[in-house]
Image 1 (cartoon, rainbow, N blue to C red):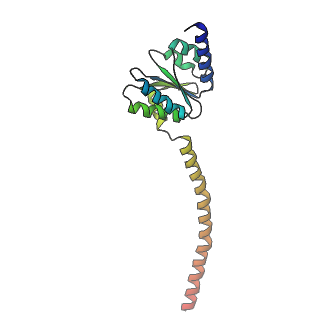
Image 2 (cartoon, one colour):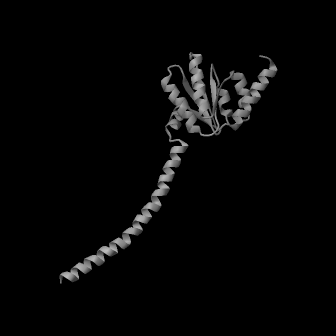
Image 3 (tube, rainbow, N blue to C red):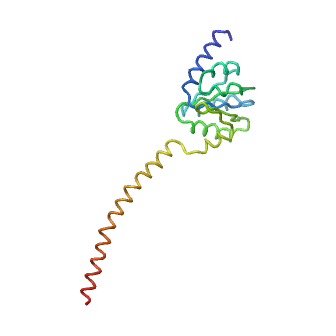
Length: 173
């Protein structure tokens, strides 16, 4: 690989890392090409770039981005997953893949400029996703007017019960 190709790789990775909200470093040592391809397809489906890159190039590419905290920790074989939309989805896909693969390891990451260790990424993966949170919010917002309407309906109903009881009492006397 010549100097110009390296510069292009650094520039592309720097551009992607600048746009990414989350970057996760993984260890793929011993995995087959089919397994890595399967992982890439799963990540691509959720809008995540997964790139195997030399550590020296990655260090240069991450400089000046939110993921600058990772550059000193890059050692041995590693690949970087860059997520742009929803960090929880990235963590979930990688954690699920790690559970099913004996050789794939999620090492650490950076979320909006802050270092996140493997345990933090596991905790992030357990959080509900954006769609689930929106559904819960909508359910809560819908419950308030429904409860209010039920409360307002009970006021005349209680008044009607009281009037009916008075009427029955007067008829009995």
